[in-house]
Length: 196
Image 1 (cartoon, rainbow, N blue to C red):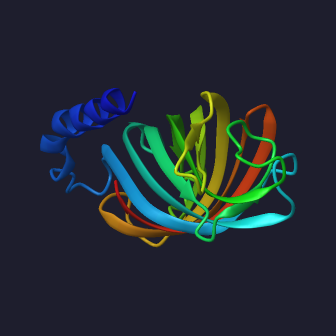
Image 2: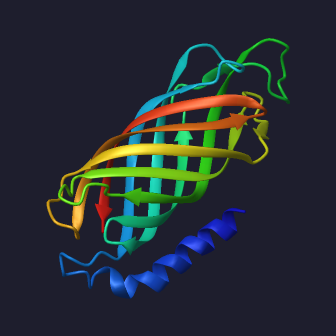
């Protein structure tokens, strides 16, 4: 799975790279890439109590199908930096809750939309794809959940006043998925560098 994802991303970069830096006309959008980091929290009431802090790393690659709409492929990894006290997952070495390392991964297609023709700063996003969780127990045993469907919604402010070129994106994102049939809701405030 990881090799397929990596080869897909490399293929997209190779195909679109010759056009990427030729976008000098402010009126013609084409290649799109953004990358960044977000800070927020995740709620999964079936597995642990409260909101747990999380750090998310994201990469999106895509192409403009309209002057205000991009089709993208998004990949992200989310970590809980302080670990999570968790119960209810397989492979637990104790019947009660224990503190574990917790990562989750997501990949899928999506859209990036600049909805207001006269306003180039507002960006809305949506992604639908697949993800899984990876739990590392103190006993060095690792549990990986099955692939589950999930989706993300985002809104951001694009600091570039032109239609193309490099820019800074600041925004927020929410996600919904499942881990071992338990619903998971996350929210993130992010900063990204974007080229469009």
